Amino acid sequence: TKIWALIPAAGIGSRMKSELPKQYLEIDGKTILEHSLSRFLEHPSIDKVVVALHANDNYWVKLKIANHPKIITIEGGATRAESVLNGLKAIQQQHGQDDWVMVHDAARPCLDNASIDALIQAGKDSAHGAILAYPSVDTVKLANANQTIDKTINREQIWLAQTPQYFPVNALAEAIEAGFKQGITITDEASAIEAQGMHPALVIGTRKNIKVTEPEDMMLASVWLVT
Ligand code: C5P
Image (tube, rainbow, N blue to C red; front, side):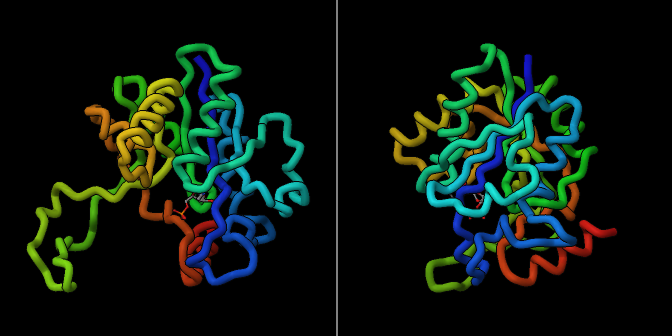
């Protein structure tokens, strides 16, 4: 069985307040997308990397890695989940029936190799897949509609989901399609899998694996990428 990586990179990064989509901002001479991709391009267990790009993307072709033999580009969709489903369909056209896929946000450039290894290992022990996540270090409040506190949630039970998220290709494609039909909000791959009654494993990642979302995240990511 092969392991694919799938990188949804078709977002426009509206919260970043920048002309350029955030995955194309540079840190230490390379775009965020290139940093995110390089972990998978260099990893010996990852067979091919599918990148979902916006239909009007003018930036990808200018990158040095644009013609990398391990990369396949496809067109993304209107939401992250649609971009992922498009990628899964491209994989299904080529894959053996028991391939797995690791979906990773283009906007998480600080992923480390050990986390990829841990996820692959967890996939061997879990029939429902596995995701990287980190236990909340903050106390978590459930809010009322008027921004007052309803109650405090037991912190021991709170994990913040990261990527990569690692699933069998067929199971994930079926779960996302079923989720669309059921009108479920799918913000990550695991949410689609959970909605079908499955329980993916939580694999502890690192706090460095942030999603670059707002301008101040650039500073944080650059510290972790250059040290
Ligand atoms: O906007 P957000 O930070 O949640 O995006 C997470 C990832 O999903 C980013 O890498 C973004 O490029 C990608 N995305 C996508 N297609 C969309 C929206 C977001 O591939 N339509």
